[in-house]
Length: 95
Image (cartoon, rainbow, N blue to C red; front, side):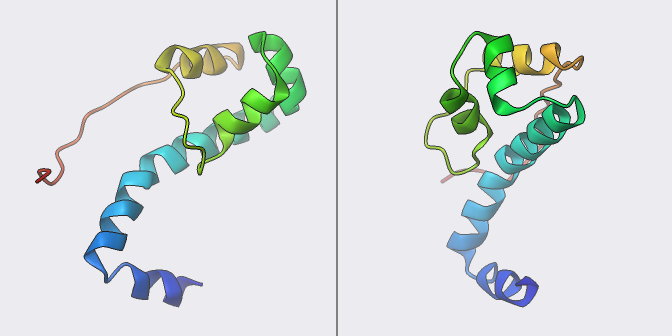
C-alpha cells in the first residue's frame, strides 16, 4: 500500500488533493479516537450533542461531502473534555 501511495503522490494533482484532505482526515481520526477513549458510541455521542447517530457518522467520515460547522466540532470536543485549536500554516499559493 505504501508503494502505491508513493507512486500516486508523484502525480501533482493527486498530491495536491491528498494534502488538502490530510488535515480533515487527521481531525476526524482524532475525533473518533477521543470518543472511543471516552468509551462512547456514536449513538451516545449523538445523544450528548442532541442529534442523530447518522449525523455523528457523517461528521466522523473523512469522505463526507458535508463540512461540519466549527461550532459543532468545538461542542464535540468540549463534551469529551477537550478544546480545539485552529492554526494557519504557510502553504503553496492557489492559482
